[in-house]
Length: 202
Image (cartoon, rainbow, N blue to C red; front, side):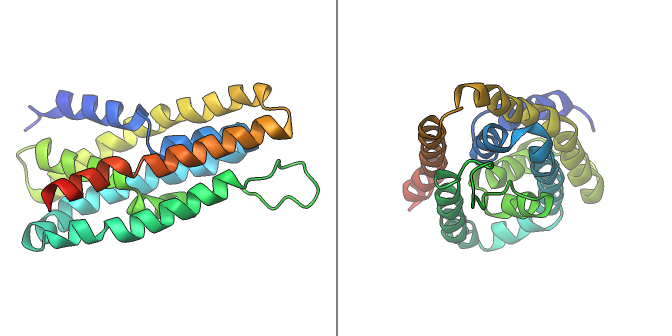
């Protein structure tokens, strides 16, 4: 039943700590708002992704197997929302600037974002397809989700902390602007792997 546990944990760590939309946004949030104000964002990512992983295993895998086109159609809202977030990051004003309206994502916004995050979908589907233990569906899907929940928060904390450290180098408006635009371009670039996969299958 637990033969896949070591591989699952390793996959959860590797996929959680490597670059992707969540981590790029946390790096930007840590640099712009600091660690304390970024904490709800982190908690939203971890809790939202754990729920997503569980629901993929319990319900959505069977739907995707029956209607494979749905996975491809997910690209549209994912791409649109990711482009919106990239625009938001690129145009973030320094929090202390007069009239600045930039705010970090709330826990609810970060949790909801997992449903339009291409990498989060890939992680959930791949984990449930390849590492779910041989057990009743509720048990196996839950074990995969809990495994992600245990390793995700420490992994993404590294990125938020990295943003806080980078904040020391971003004291001028010009440097912060360059940093934010770079992060926005990285967000847009994060769409490439999924688009490439879809085009390769068509």
